[in-house]
Image (tube, rainbow, N blue to C red):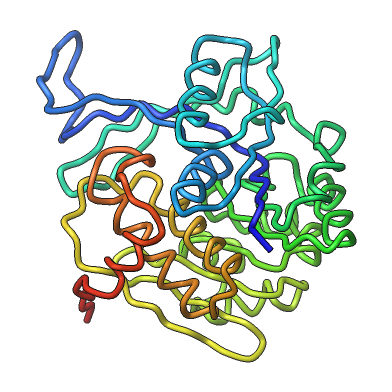
Length: 313
């Protein structure tokens, strides 16, 4: 059976500028090497990499009825993502970010929430979700756990594999906000700061088990240069990152999610899913933007088999 994924939630239009060491004072100007833009967000960015890896992908969510939304949807379509389930809003602009990329690849962000927060369970394409094999919810915190559960619960009842990742930074109050959705998630894919911040745990494994106690089936945590940690009730799997020249970390978390979910669709083990996730993140990190890299599944698997592992001490 082929993998069909609906990635529902955050759609963001990113503008990246590199390299940026400081913001000019007053009316000052600085010459940079590169300015570009790309589709991004925990739904759209994940969908794009999933499509590269061979999944059939549709996105669902909301963007503005504006030129930014036109461009965002056209760029997703160019990568093979079906955007016919995305709603257009006259009342809000398309969510967007401006990202000044530092020389080491890290970046702060200037962000407009826009139409992403004008989407809820009544907008979700429930009939189409029930026909998919996988539902990935990008940033359930934007609508809240109770609203997210109204989308995830019927999907699970229909036999759809469910997953989610988070857009917000770790905040202890956020755990209670999203908790009603957690029993309906087969997989949760946060980063380490989110796990520690949301749970107040002293270790990632302890934090992951807090989510497992709420009903999540598997927690796959990204750890930057230290790779990933996958935790279930039965096992803890450490997966190292690959050694690459990092240009930009934008979209690496979404790429990991896409690789992990594609591995699930291919019937791979959790370790192999984590490796494919780290592979996708490494390929994206070598250029500017979440859509960097002309790769497919075969390219990714070859990379994983031959690329050096990053040794972290």
